[in-house]
Length: 352
Image (cartoon, rainbow, N blue to C red; front, side, top):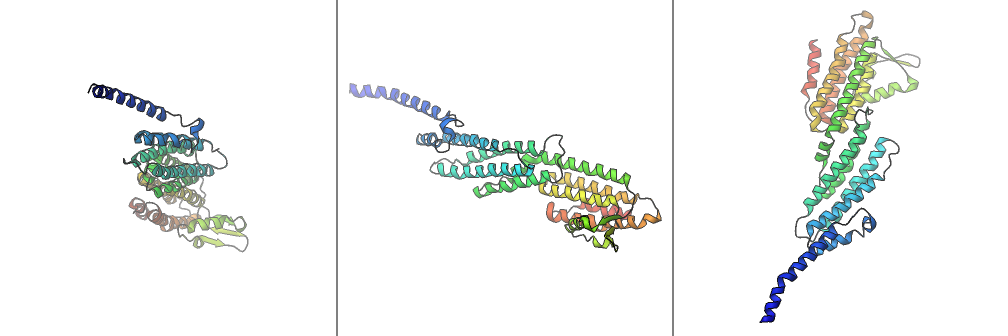
């Protein structure tokens, strides 16, 4: 009986030693520097994760697995050099980032498929954390403070990133809402900056307007480009064109209107690619002020008989053709909702 008592007395001590060794082993495995040495390689890094799972340390195993993937992901991103255009660079960044995150999700499910505890919330939290890092890096490249980004560049970059983000939907993870929220400050600032540029240019053109019809040469292709642009809005330019026997074509629209249409089209296309519900009010307010200013300038034209045809034609184009077409474009391709604020411009111009 004394032997049995001796063994029972040693039981707690043995258990304490085992627990101590288990803690030491767990700490050693979880504190591995996964970004260097042998553990920087994919296959070798699986060993400590498997050992933690054998010890039933699921939380520590998922943390170690995801920490390793985070290190490797950032290393891959930093290898990408800024070469060529901004859109090409963003394409490479987005492709590398989102394809890697999707692959991590597939591997994560395979590695932790036999664990009783639900591990997917850990992966989702990891994705959100990595996405915040990516959005911050993306914003510093595409929306730099104080930079004047050309129309189309920012919108194209946002479109590229969101398109690649759709890869995660295959893993049952829709991050488009989170992605839009993270990019919101940069998108809002870009829309504001582009709006200011258009307004300043419109004001300058208004001061320099001579109220003459615009002359185009068939050989330059400019008239075709303008025609193709307006076809985007189902507006027929031919009714405003007067062809002569030579190489010239005259458009009975004043210079400020044609220039406005070109710059506004670029602005609107950029906004369409960046659009989300958070910027709806800002976008509608900006578009309203742009269209309102340009339309109102035509009401301020001198009452000279010789310029009446061009002014009248430009006024009809803006209020009967272009603004209604922009409204339709917004309601069907951007906001997917009515835009009564912009429609009110037409009512106001009819009153004037």
